Image (cartoon, rainbow, N blue to C red; front, side, top):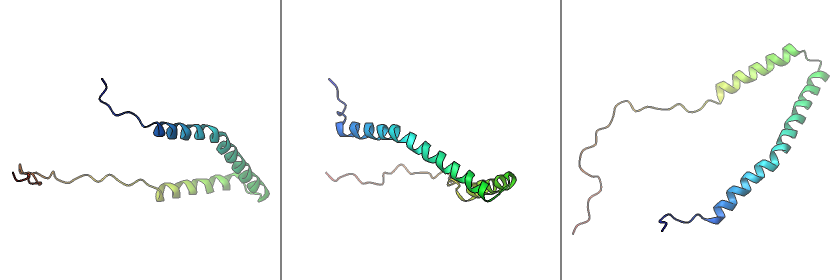
Length: 94
């Protein structure tokens, strides 16, 4: 006899469809990234930009991205708070 709740079949279908969509769309995303890289390379060639300039612009962008898109820092509690033995919710009167 199993006491666990039965799994909702709609949840299984939703998870399966999301995984399937990600698998089917990943080549499309990769193709779009390749097209964007080619466009950027063509833009650099047409603008007669040297490789040094492109690397410098990329490194400045990386530094700015790391500076402004940081994760929130974990805040640690300074001192532990001692809780008394009394409960905060009163028992129902009998």
